[in-house]
Amino acid sequence: MRAMVLDKAKLPLQARDVPKPKPGRGQLLVRVSACAVCRTDLHVVDGELPNPKLPLILGHQIVGRVEEIGEPANFKSEISDVKFAVGDRVGIPWLGWTDGECVYCRSNRENLCDRARFTGYTIDGGYAEFTVADARFCFHLPEHYNDVDAAPLLCAGLIGYRSYRKTGNARCLGMYGFGNAAHLIAQIALYEGRDLFVFTRPGDVKTQQSAKALGAKWAGGSDEMPPEKLDAAIIFASVGPLVPAALHALAKGGIVVCGGIHMSDIPSFPYADLWEERVITSVANLTRRDGEEFFEIAPRVPVRTHTETFPLQEANVALDRFRAGKLKATAVLLINPS
Ligand SMILES: [Zn+2]
Ligand SMILES: [Zn+2]
Image 1 (cartoon, rainbow, N blue to C red):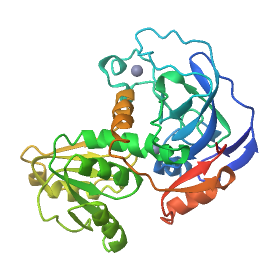
Image 2 (image 1 turned 90 degrees about the vertical axis):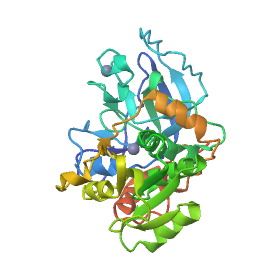
Image 3 (image 1 turned 180 degrees about the vertical axis):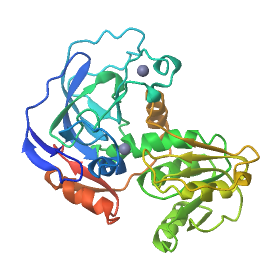
């Protein structure tokens, strides 16, 4: 099968013919239709995330169809009501495997599993014609979305949603960075009646205008203070100095949620900004529960995705444009268009 392969960090992906994978116990062989490009893919290529599988097929926002089903898994103590048949459409996310038995898995925190494996990072992903995935972690996708539009929901949507849920019932919600995930989650926040305050790079008037057009109550630079104190803020940009900036904009008891897997260092800040029960937390990965909730609410809003497609062999072009901030929408690789 054709695949785009990362041999080593900081090198371009190589277009290559590799053996088609075989589904093992509990796995699905999936014919990939579309795979969205995530900032995490860039972090892996750029060597900012430690110890990827090498050589590696990137990609963890995969939409495809079940081609073959491996032997039944017989996992004890697992929610195994998720059933797939050959030909079913399936979504494959970042969380690709957990042991089901560690202290985290046994307390509904499988996102923190000690032995978790991640699609397109520690196991091969979807920048290829086929992939295999553990059926326990695959999702049925809402019919509302075609394959291309569904792909960005699988990470930007899911992990963004987990960050959003950590903000509780915040009335005034800030978002630092307004890329793919923020754009998707803003739609849910507005649907649920939150007042939205969007922070962009100072001077990025275009993004500020698009946030206001979507329904944000206020949009400005990350160096500005919002007109009201925030009950919560989600940081989508991988920029550490935004953490004290967001903290400084919080009301008492407010929370800052760091939504990314990688962030530059956080500078020191006065304790007074944390005092009065303000909280800083991060979000790691996702649980299947997050996915089920998100795919239930997304078509009701309905959350709309904006995509820009590239053929599989142009994955490097998509990554380079992402890195340079030159994408117009979420990049989605088209692999076996259906
Ligand atoms: Zn575990
Ligand atoms: Zn991702």
